[in-house]
Image 1 (tube, rainbow, N blue to C red):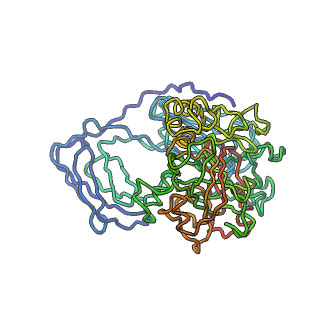
Image 2 (tube, helix red, strand yellow):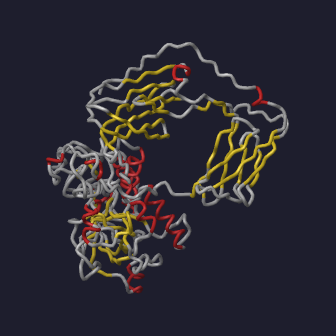
Image 3 (cartoon, rainbow, N blue to C red):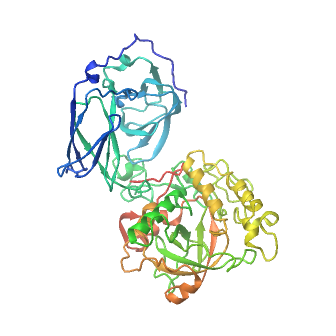
Length: 576
């Protein structure tokens, strides 16, 4: 890609004049209404004028009124409000407020398939004019995504004829160079913060204390709650799709590729690559929060101390046992841990790990009696698109990976586990809890786990390291092959919001929080014996991220929640 032309455009200076009326000493009244997304007033919302230090509550119709005392000054809070980005034809105008702000401009098909980044850099403060073309594009309409810091905007990019122009990006320090295209700058003198239980807090800038505002609150939704999986990325072949026909389904983009090749068809090398979502892993931030939210939702325990950890597992269907049909996709199970490996400390010295509630995300895993738990550095399994590891024979040939740094492991060793480090973690035979708890053992584990680095996401990096470390602690020693007792259960709501797949299964019981040990499971009488766990992290797109293995196997999907999410190489779920 050609490098953007960042040469400044020299224009006369622009001086922003702020009316002295903004700083009048006369008493002023701030009025407004707090509404929900349907426009209905919200009562008892707390409205705070931050700098003035005043607060009130909205009435039954959502209205509020605050009188700002004489002499209130906005000292220290004055800041320039930058205008929003705008588009004129194929020209994009946008402001950058601070030096070093990350800016990306990306092109997608209307069906959501990523084509290219036009700009992906930290830019200096200024006003920019961009001609967004960087490679040959066929005539048609494309989607243009602009990200400036944490703000995102979308535009349509019309291409009238096949084009091969280079991206042109012009910067100016002078606002008036694009004054006809951008709204005028204004000055914020204060801010209004509005809160209400059950809603996401919001803050709006004030340009005057004598104003009337309508402030919209959105119902609170956890950050891991996303739209359903994108139906253009979860089919072997998209129905009603004609290749390269933009008027057909998914804009003519009829297929996607599993990131792992092998086993994926090498002819799919030019298609978008889809990976497992790292947010599925045991101890990811999304899974931890979902377990807390479900504990509160179902009244299991305090939201700060959920009775379960959440995860996903590879599990082949067990007809006549736990399962009914030929596919286990998106079904959930409660696992009770019974016996660890011989080279592990043993109960009762070793505490039983907290019961896992897991959802099946992959088949051809460890057989109908097995549950292959997805965790950070859990072992490659049969294939690998996590890291470009030349020592592993089935590393993907597509040359696209989630990590550019990964904990060193013998490819056949099952990942980073305390079991592998006899000198640091096994001080005697039989091994002891003290040996695993020792600083030598835990320092070794942490040193190796912290080698994980995902260049596209700090969250993926942090989640992988946490998962790798926590699964090797005495209190949560999941990273080994356990014998377990298992029970098919109804999937908790928020677990499915992390994964994207939900079945209609109201006839099934919810997990049982009071069952945590083998003795409790035997007394309960509804758990089955003879099952075991293994561990893995291979980063390939899982079986159950293909809707063909869910609805296509006659599993009763709940509306659009018809498969697990797929993710791009940065760990971002591909949503509708």
